Image (cartoon, rainbow, N blue to C red; front, top):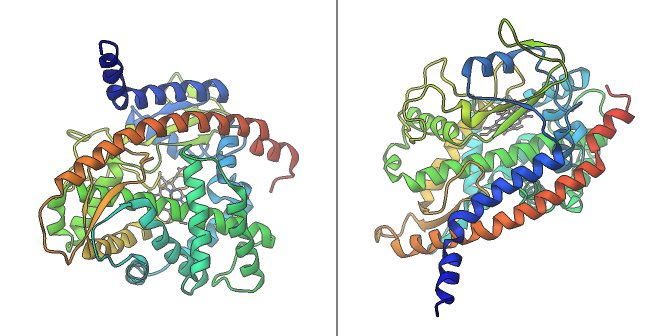
Length: 436
Ligand code: HEM
């Protein structure tokens, strides 16, 4: 009995300290395997903005050890992924195509997003427990298929797109290993579709069919699906935890403020990096030498200059010069979906709350490795008040999942980092290829 009590106390305390200790250990192992790399900017707003906007902060992959792990996570075809292309002719061709594909009037984007959500979101007969990221992925698969192909998404294509995006984001968060066979099935589908002339837009000049398939897969069926599903998970979790916002969701200006504040507190990028192509002066006496890896810390930057920065406030005023760049630095390869994403999020948010009331007591952190646990109650069901018991169970389950997940992330993350350093996909590409 005497020995059982301390063991029980130790076991019960695990969720409170183990996940944090494992994160610390993971960072330490990552630094050991990856090598200490990168100058991190974020706590000084002026320097952050000046360096990020500087024309010499323009390298994306070549010369950074950490590119090997990004290329590993984004395979197949990371060398065609817009985000990771070096500046040059190929990048220009690809970026022009992305802009053309995403160019559509806001009203059309809003209607299409609402239609896709309405086709995909299940009608519920009773309360259901879901993970918001899993609920959202098919909606965005449907939407971006229609944007790229100009026609509704067949169910088997939706499964391929969701399978691919889910595999990428799960490995990125070190919650699972990558499965190239799952991803290559989507590549084959895209190759066949390009050959059959089924893409509704002109593809980038100078790319082979295979390269064009990798380009579409990277920008539209990895990045777009993952980013939109994660952004919506944050937005819906915020709504679930702050039900007072529900009364104002008909007001576009309020919803835009809600999205801005959500992406300020939970920016999708923790860190973005650049490799400098020339010296960048920081002040009179110091400069960042050419060839440096500079890391831009979004969460730190987003806290600067705001009163009570950790408080969620959807009515927060954002002056023009606010430290708020959820879609990147305007002068340095910002997100091409900058205008489209918020409009479509607004439409999908409204479709979701029209169908369900949302409740969540799970932890809400920037990286949302828990995929946003949530209870959906059909909106038609007469309110029986907040489901306290279900909320207590969700909280308990989420805490304990944190313990097992953080151990899994430690083991799989270390393995993938080692494997990526062994394969050296990016380093070898730039050593071997006559790169355009
Ligand atoms: C709410 C959703 C989204 C957020 C918050 C977001 C955020 C960002 C950010 C911060 C960057 C810049 C990263 C850097 O400086 O390295 C970026 C780049 C990019 N995003 Fe998004 N994104 C979102 C949705 C999308 C969608 C829907 C697409 C669809 C095609 C997309 C495609 C890209 C691409 C291709 C780049 C690289 C741009 C370049 O290097 O030229 N993103 N995104």
